[in-house]
Length: 196
Image 1 (spheres, one colour):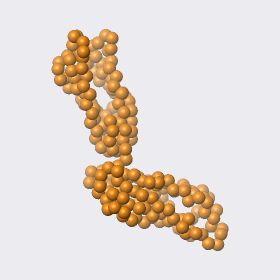
Image 2 (tube, rainbow, N blue to C red):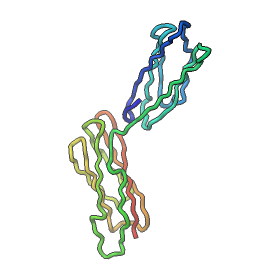
Image 3 (tube, rainbow, N blue to C red):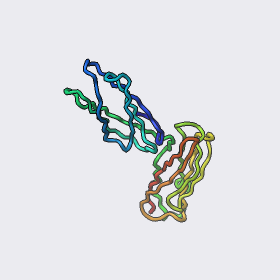
Image 4 (tube, rainbow, N blue to C red):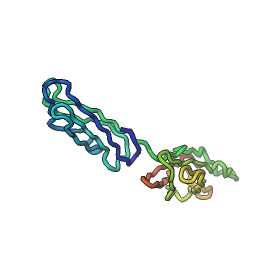
């Protein structure tokens, strides 16, 4: 199963008996009931079944597990299906992490270019991306947004306020709230460095 975060994905599996003895499926269990739901339909009584597997609403992480079908077969009383859900984000940030290096505030003048970085936020799912809100984790981080391709790509300008920089190592985050016609997604950028 492959799709995007939050999207409902459906797959069907056909189970066919190649033996003369009729196949009966008595029970279905799963190790990932919190991630999927399933429904068994009889196509040809005793011969063919259709198992529909769907992701549950709101799944936001990839998963794997198994679905076990209990049958009337002596040799193979349980059929195991391994299910993998590979979910991708619909919004991409590049780079996901920005390193500002060592910022020496003891020097008289700090090069403001060393306090400025950019990242690109783009839609990989469909056009119509809107950045609703950007929330830096500290008040000494300034953020500006520039639209490169309306609804598809944005440049995020990040500037550290030299007058408010705290001494020592820092690891901060910028949270970006996005939406589209069909989905909303939150992405973030990690900021790291050291102030001496």
